[in-house]
Length: 292
Ligand code: RIB
Image 1: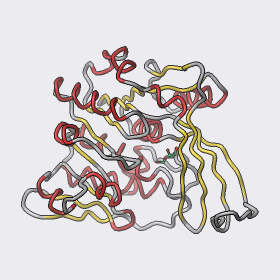
Image 2: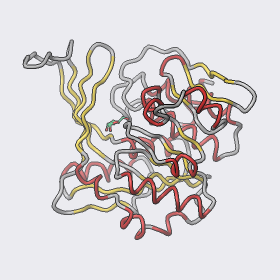
Image 3: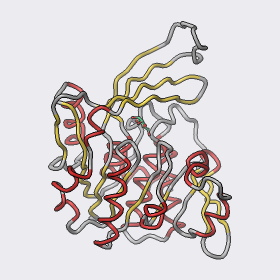
Image 4: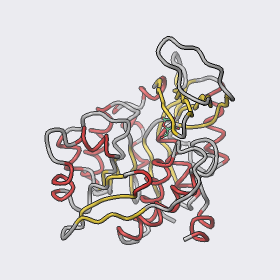
């Protein structure tokens, strides 16, 4: 079993479904409202655990009902919570999601996720012992991403950076990360002023651009490759990227080739969108293998 460490956000998703998004200043009637566990870090941890990895989540929640729900959900999914800290004086992170017209729009309020700081990582240092890979995203402070990149680099642990949501990333982090998985918008910010295709070539076998229903594009050192996604009837695309990242990390850390890992991850991501909620459709190992 491979050991994966996920450093990132844990939130509760407040999800409204409606037939359309309201215009500025407009009020409309929605169809439903649900609260479900989310946050990019937590989603990646749960997805990886369902796929059979030994997962350690490093993050913070508030001392409130949402925080308790998140911790229970980790336990239910077999994610180790030894390095999760309930913090006082701040609420658990929330994501305010509108599902309308076949896609989502999300506003994230970081809350306790802001406390996933370099000082906090310092206290959790032994989580890196025997880690096969570390996964990190950008709903936590940028200094933490810098710090974790440095640690992984020093310790020789592969680091997968999912640069979502979009924000500029330092050259040092780009150099130190082993794998970087932006979508097209995030790639444009990551390589601002550069041509994304050229950047992909320069960082061959390192930068993987996720292009939604088209698939995942990367450069293998010789040529550009597009690994197509699987076509499914999507119910809710929230968390598809997280499922992709987790499954990609699981497959790579088990020693699968890049191409096979992307295929495995594309399959997992395609299954994840067939049910409601970021984690609702995240498949088990048997479900992915049975459908490949
Ligand atoms: O990637 C999907 C996640 O992004 C949601 O679960 C939500 O929490 C937002 O952070």
